[in-house]
Length: 197
Image (cartoon, rainbow, N blue to C red):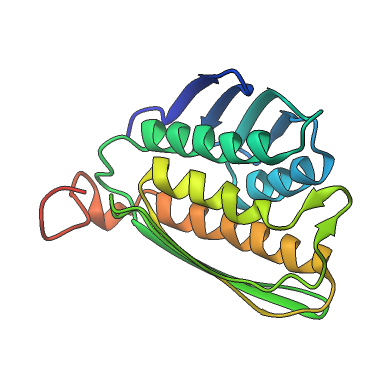
């Protein structure tokens, strides 16, 4: 399997974002988004997904965090789609349950080529730090649409919103790691009876 690295830049009147992803990394993050709690969550994705992420984002944070968070999801999704290539030899599916104290989340992903987000999360607070918890949906919707994956996110329990979010992002990282891993038994084969994804 060749090197699975991609760099994508998104430049709009609202945001300027560059993302580099290495799917076979060591879990390193270099990140400057201007949204501190988002940086913390992206660190969970890199560390638990064992992907290297280099992210530079400048957005219209004087308005709010919405455009930066959404566009980062879009750009990250595009980078994953480019890095993974034609998907031959990968596991395709990934899943993870992750607890953090009282919180427990489950994330299941399929690199199906069919975008779909199914997110069942009731955050117990409207914001974590200054970050509106509604923006997590925007982030994952952007990722799903551009990575072209089916993604199920369920927060099964939890009353601390920080813990809820952290279990989601850790589980997302671990599910990604499983799905994009090369499967030695699938070497060179498309993980679909259709012959394409």
